[in-house]
Length: 116
Length: 107
Image 1 (spheres, helix red, strand yellow):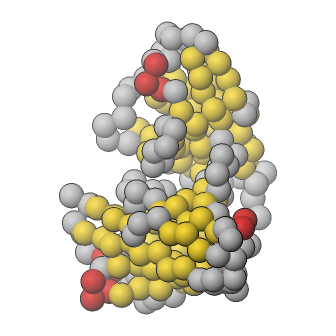
Image 2 (cartoon, rainbow over the protein chains, first blue to last red):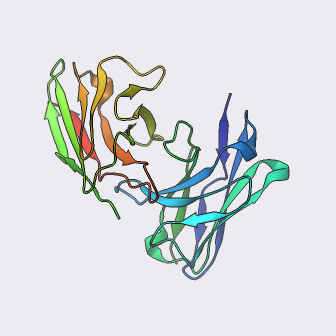
């Protein structure tokens, strides 16, 4: 069955960087886009963008350009989200979600906490 | 960009009640709309796509309708396990915007 397994919770100081992973299994990784969704504490879902797992081409939503980078390692069926120059307002749960339009499968979420 | 507006933002209803949540797009999106359920502390779950197609395994008390700019998620008979926040999402084109969510509680 399809599984998306994300890396564990992270605690970082402001200004640091973090890299979240999303390991896929149960399907052909390069046949389905991977999306990233943010959920700040007590807030709604926010689509961050997606990466074409065949070409590696990323698309970023407004508000997620510059400090946010989507990448892949197709040899291990894994997508990555890297956030640099972390700010307190980046504290959130970050989800990966498969498919280019609506999302049947989601990772379990990774809590990133930014605090000094 | 197209905005997605849900109403109400929260509601409280009794077990067995019919519950209706509305999602409005600022421009027409045909039927490129999905609905998700997110229980507290859990991962969102796809309920409906293409505005009215029930995802496999979702109870038949959930239903979706609408096209263009106005959409509805209906729970025909509210159950205790339906306590959750519900989100609509458009997917006709990027950005794949979510509505702000509707929190459903039991009265």
